Image (cartoon, rainbow, N blue to C red; front, side, top):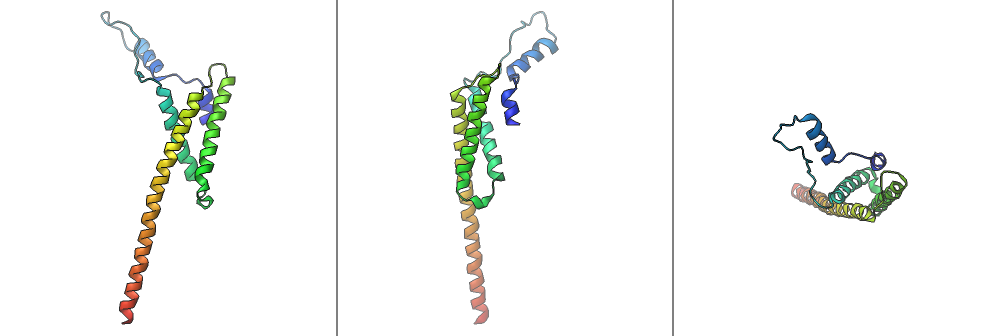
Length: 149
């Protein structure tokens, strides 16, 4: 899915909005038929790269078995980063797309941020479950002591 979307020319939100504005909305004589833009943020596509690769990391991380351990983070990072770089190289071979090193860096930043958030959340989740297990064990020991005396 990511590969297909990377190779197909998708109209931007500005193109879609302009098509609706010009073709669908009836033009009043007083209203100037101008181009409408909604993506005025500079380098908006870099944010999109980071967000979509962060979601890709989440999907791969969930699908990778837990028994791999902490190598899971390294495997997910290498796989998704190399995937993004390969897609950028393939885009250079297509007629209507171009490769950009900044897109690879945006992919990498989304990957790193996502893995960092996953690591922090899993650390606190594991710590909470381990402490809960220890509390349950302590309660059982106290209950056994009270029962025997």
